[in-house]
Image (cartoon, rainbow, N blue to C red):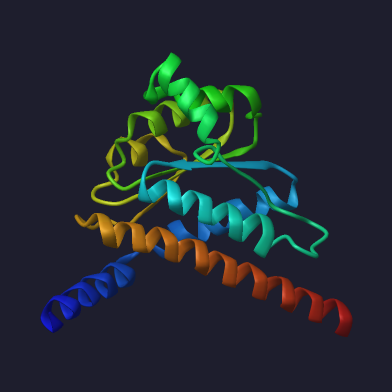
Length: 195
């Protein structure tokens, strides 16, 4: 059992070491610009990726927005279960995200698709629509990034053939961005006070 633990940790550390820092920095800047410009951010995923999308919303809408003058406006498309069930039943599961986007998304909004494989059809349909509407699209993927990496404007790819480590990386991105932006806000306040 200890060997299995060490193998997992070793692979996770290796993936972290090999993440493209420029991809991550771009992702952070896109999120920051969305907040500063009052743009909506839509996020989605299936299964564990859906749970990560929900967690992003919690951390950004409350954790990084509470008591702030400028707030994140993030909407998780997999959190409205009754709407997803209605579209699944009446239209098809491949359309549960894109049909919701049709009600809301505007040019310049951010649309984030999370898919370990990069090939979840319902995520791809939503990203394709968002691209056509002039939204800024971001893919969070694992493996080789699949189709999602190819069709989004920006991408952060874990580049590992392991779904659990891929999901670890995506959750880590959420917490890392939270930490960076909260600390940036604290430093900016110090500069204002001292300046």
